[in-house]
Image (cartoon, rainbow, N blue to C red; front, top):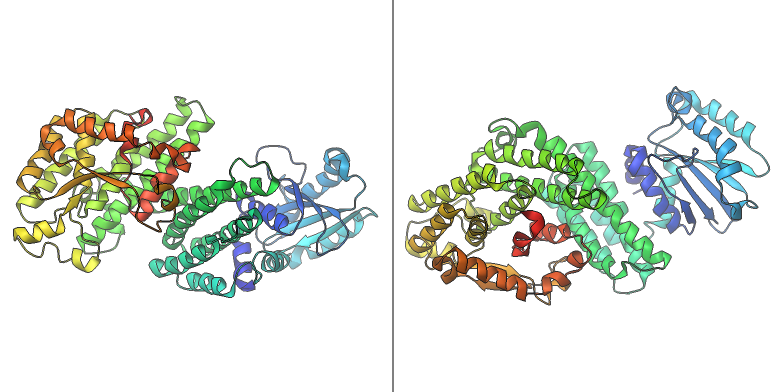
Length: 562
């Protein structure tokens, strides 16, 4: 396990990775962290500062200057301001004398050279001589290299009473088979469940569990990045974020330090998810999205079903990333600021290119792909006319679906098993069609958006499909109920309720839209969901995408998505 941690530490970047891990580690060791990284502000050489006793020894002030990887000559004293020696000089000359809180003036100070690798031999003598010359009665130096950090992580994060041997086994197996993303994720999923099944409601137990989950995610992320394979960590991060939300949210807005630390640790998992999503977009999607069929070809399968399923999965990932960005940025800037909307438009353009250059995205093979379509529609609706992007996409889609029904082709179905989907359609008999299309969330979502935006031709085509091919099918919309908050983020049990809208669709846009809106107004449970109440609604949409839950139609009637 220590070798795994060493490799993980050596791969971490200095900013937002190693310096983000360190405060949690120090807190777990019992120290009081009184200064954390502040990118853009003056830190006078100190990245992290903490006070307390380590392993029962004398209480001291620990001042950390953090660097990534191995420490070489160039990192020690090159031409950059961020080199380690200038940072140490600034700690000695400025921070200790003018920036250290006065309540720590009587305590010994340890300046810690912190890096994920080792000190290279080419600079070892320089570092040792510097430490020898600058050591005083009050100020001393320690090197927190990869070995030291790995020992502390193993002792304070991964000891048996905090991370059982069974959980360690899951982590090792998840790392060992990264080239098999589904299996790797399944092992990490077991790890995440074991850590977040917190029986005790003591906040310290919850904090420990979340920190364990966070460090495990970072280890998987570092290894996945080295292997240039982000699939396993993507699913693991989605799942872990949802599990973490469920156990952390009862402690939000608490005033005690442990409750604030719970919220901070959850935010670190959310930030990792954002970082991973951004990296996925840049590495996997953007290089191919601008060229016809390029992304479809990169899926590397001759089977159109594989390509179709993966394309809709990518569509959902890009859309949820955009919705997260919008939610986050709109809290940082004025809602209509040009800075916000420029970034949103660029991400919207990626989705439009994705759809235009990959024609399979007009032919959903599975009814549940309505979830990914819904997310894309929602994101493309932000401060943008639907006529130039959503309308032509849905129009082509509904005509393509109609053709598939008429020709007994790959029409949307309720099949879940891959071996069943590749045999679809097995038969042209009406009994087979009725068996595999018993219910639909796809057509009500298309019809709802068409009705809301006066796309009469699209709406009429949905009516035609209903009457001609799917008179037996239960068109339905899903709504959260009182039991949804308990099960939404862990998917431990079926929850929510269904509104059947078969006759309403036939009666016309007005009747259909009124039925949906009335149900949204009557179903107050949506507003009571913790993610909605705390104004972090993308958590709901993430749960829908990950667990394949139909998205609540409340979002379609939200003024922010028009």
